[in-house]
Structures are given as structure tokens and as C-alpha cells.
View 1 (cartoon, rainbow over the protein chains, first blue to last red):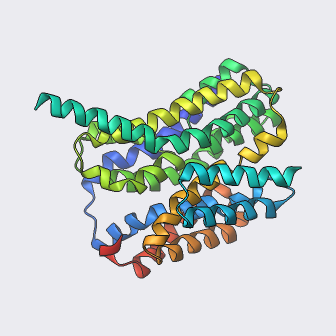
View 2 (view 1 turned 90 degrees about the vertical axis):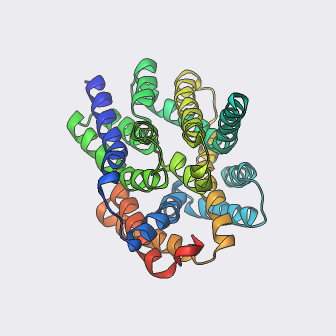
View 3 (view 1 turned 60 degrees about the vertical axis):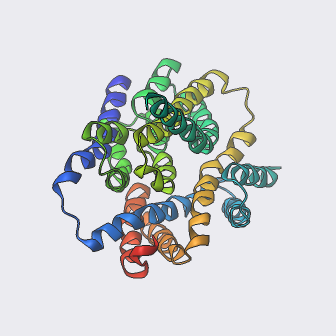
Length: 97
Length: 237
């Protein structure tokens, strides 16, 4: 049963990832679509950050948001992404004590 | 010539390790948390490690572990996984578009490793796509991330009870912080990018309660990028 779940999950995870590689050559992209594809990473990052970040400490949504603001500030002042991650973890940890 | 090629290969792999290192750091705590949760849901160490090996999709695996714990049927779990991972279709499309000139077998192989994180990091390093052996650069990012995800899950399954929950919880912010750390420098260079990201956030925030988390991210990504067609100037992105 569990192996059926694992294999089924593997199949439905790989399909959406791999199909684009085989269809991309057959599609001619108009220029607006090129722009759309280039904008996708930034849109995806936005959608991945919020509102998900509010669930870091489910009972304290503001903790994640606050850590996010600290991370934005650190990244703005050119702190390396590993440093940004470390600062955010410390910020959330402070909310748990 | 031979030596030059070899140097270039080494350079691409080295750069891939460096570019992938934030993902490794972000994945480890999340993977450990997954291992702990999966054990608690009654999944064996072999099964949970295999799940990470074969599936490699963080959010879906968390959801599945929760659903298995609740005794939900296999078909429901598989359908929910499919819906949650549809966002990777959009990401993979953008990813292969960036790598249009590389051989199909490489595009296909690399696409298997598209996750939120490997995609985000790869698209920030899009200038790499013009270099020789760029598939090794992206491949290294994916392989190091994959290895840390599988290893972390295993570790979580083994040491689950030893790690204080407080710490694993705090580490849950790591991936969000990484996304912020990737996004902010792009916004700094070109402010209008922020409009696209904020629209995607709002669309996801407003739609998630209606259509679920997975679809919310899909809608936020697709519609947020549509906003980009109107606000971004072609030559600046």
C-alpha cells in the first residue's frame, strides 16, 4: 500500500516536470510569451514566499512575517543568501523562547 | 584544448556546488523535519528514505506523510500530489526555455530535478546557460540538492526524537528566507520586478483559501507573470 503510494507519487511528480522538455521545441513563442516565461521566476518566488511564510510558527503568523522583513533588509544590504537564511532562522528562534 | 575543456568542466561543477549550497542548507532542516514527521505517521525508515529518493518533492511529501498518518486512500494522496506539483509544469517550461539550445536528453534529464528551490536558483543564474557545459552547472545544483534532501530525510528518520522541536520549527523559515535572498537582489537591480512578485503573492493569498495551496501557487505564478507582460520591459529582464 505504502509502496503503491510512493510509486504513484513519483510518477505524478515527474510527469509535469519532464513534459515541458519534450513539447518546448514544438511551440513557437510569440514575444509576449517570452516575456511571460521570463517573468515566471519572479512570480513563482513571490507566490512561494507569501502567504506560506506565515505558517512557520502556525500559532504566531507574525513571527514568520517579521523574520521575512529582517531577511528582506539583510538581502537589500547585500548579505549573502546563506547569511540571510541564518539571520531568519535566528529571528524565528527568538520568537519560540 | 583538451586541458581547457577539462578546466571548464571543473569550473562548472565547482560553480554548481557554490550556487547549490544555500539549497543544501535550506533543505537539510526541512528534510530532517520530514523524516521526523514521517516516522511519527508510522512510515518506516526505508519507506520514507525511498519516498525522498523517488519523489523529491518537499511539500507533497509532507502532505502525503500527514495523509498516510490519517489513513487516507492511496488514490487521493496521488491526486493531491499531482495537483500540488502542477506548479512545476510552469517552472519546468520556463527552465527548458532558458536551456533551449542544449540537447533534448539533457533538458529531459535536468527537468526531473526541477523543484521550487532548484528552479529558483537556476533561474537566478540564467547567464550560465550561454556557457559551455552549462548542463553540468545546473546538474550539479540539482544533484547536491537531491543528495541533501535524501540524506536529510534519512537523518530525520534516525535522529528524529533527539532534535528539539523548537529548533526544527525555527529552521522551517530557511527556505522562505532563501527565496527572499534570491528575489531581493533582482528587485534591487530592476524595481518593477517587485510589482510582479507582490501581485503573485496577493493572488496566491486571495485564492489559496478557495482553491487550495497547490492551485494557489499555480495561479499566483501564472497570473503574476501575466502582470509581468505589461509592467516589465523586454530588454531589462
